[in-house]
Length: 217
Ligand code: ADP
Ligand code: ADP
Ligand code: ZN
Image 1 (cartoon, protein in one colour):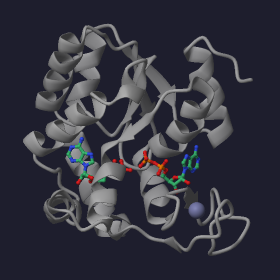
Image 2 (cartoon, protein in one colour; image 1 turned 180 degrees about the horizontal axis):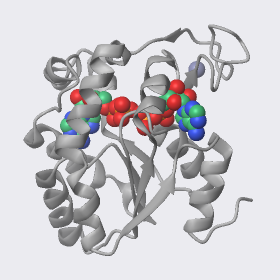
Image 3 (cartoon, helix red, strand yellow; image 1 turned 135 degrees about the vertical axis):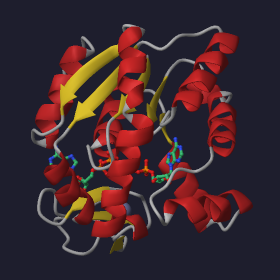
Image 4 (cartoon, protein in one colour; image 1 turned 120 degrees about the vertical axis):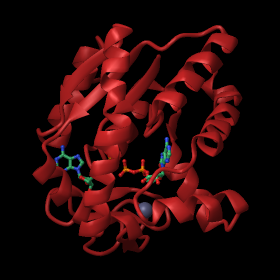
């Protein structure tokens, strides 16, 4: 399956993606994760991306489109993928359409995860991420059983620089301006499927699998 997971920052895209790719056997392609990995490795891409990420703005389209094209060309994406956090602008969506056309494949569905703004802010400011394996937790909604250590690998949990209240607000505004138009874009193509992301994690996963015609194993 070729799936786009859309939704504002904090909607639970990363959380759901990790659970879904396990069920569906396709790679999880997150542009945010790719930028953070590049930054951790100190590559030029990472340093350039950081300039935009710190303020909550978007990394320029040409840079972002370039890394996604490269990623989609890799062998493991040939039979499907779950895109998380891409596309975020109309030019990115157009570039994706062109790339898929060149590859001779098509999207199956665009899942739009809907959550209200107050809940998004609470989720973003309480998010904690494992420095070692990238697992995502929440201080209140999804705490690690190991306190301030990752329950799956023992790694240190940290707060992303862009998950402060002020930057989170800005990211939600950027989403409304630059990314929300893609809801109509994909609705017009008949690909959009809305998901209520305000429910508990396992219920959202179940709803998505049901909508995809897959019951949870
Ligand atoms: P996104 O990738 O869309 O920004 P994440 O998956 O990182 O979102 O989730 C944002 C925060 O909200 C994390 O701290 C995560 O643990 C928490 N979270 C995710 N899904 C839910 C949910 N259904 N209910 C409550 N909290 C959630
Ligand atoms: P969230 O989990 O809050 O949705 P991401 O991890 O997806 O955030 O993205 C973090 C930051 O990385 C964004 O605020 C933006 O600066 C950059 N970024 C990620 N994906 C894209 C994209 N498709 N286009 C431009 N910038 C992006
Ligand atoms: Zn970990």
